[in-house]
Length: 346
Image 1 (cartoon, rainbow, N blue to C red):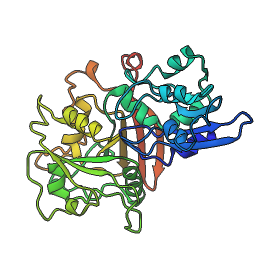
Image 2: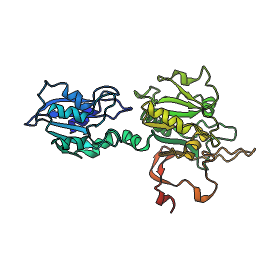
Image 3: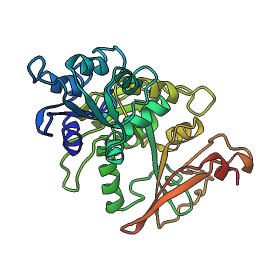
């Protein structure tokens, strides 16, 4: 199974999970192995079987990181492929959570195949944790990030905000960007700061893995904006009335899910952050707190880090559970997630 898990990491992240498979002979010797190379290609089990001559897998054991699928999509059911190959025993780690694709283990058992589940399940779940979450939620996982002063301001009264936090915090943000599939900002942030939306190391070089740049808002993106130099194509979508009842964040999540995005990093200022929080789309909140005070300014402008999120009474507050607190130079990073209902109502 550990060999199958290593093979699985060779496959791309996206619409489909990373899956590896190993075919073993009667003495435990490896006859063939394979992995899923992306949407529309052979699944890991079929990839491994394709390396064997007809009949060579009869009586063999198939070790797979994910339960063999039981549906016909771009490819046929892996459970059927294993049965037709004469596989006598199937060992897998994680059960398939899909409504249509699950049931492969039952199909195999009904045909007389010895099936063992749950081997190295923790490692296998960790490998495809984002994909499993997308199956459960029906949308990508969302991290909402902002930086603020100790008194909760994201900018000064004139709108300037560069830089509230120090270099260690900014380096941490870029590392986290590199772990996301997409980064979302609003047109307000884009026009004010002209961000590149890339994930960069301390020396300015780009991480090998870059998030897809996404801009949400009605205003046009200037032709000379830095985001146009991003190695990935810009996705610009209308974000009409983000401050009101009509919001496009949920529909954007549906579109990103269909593009194979599993993890979204929202870094677009108070308007965008508040829209995602208000829509209940924040699975993780990152708050970088700088040891500084900004206040509201002489004109009364109040640049709070979060604006209206649907809370008019304390009973409606968004309760979070802190998962970690870290010191980054002079700054503090608080990582939190939505609290379970019982805890949130306590």
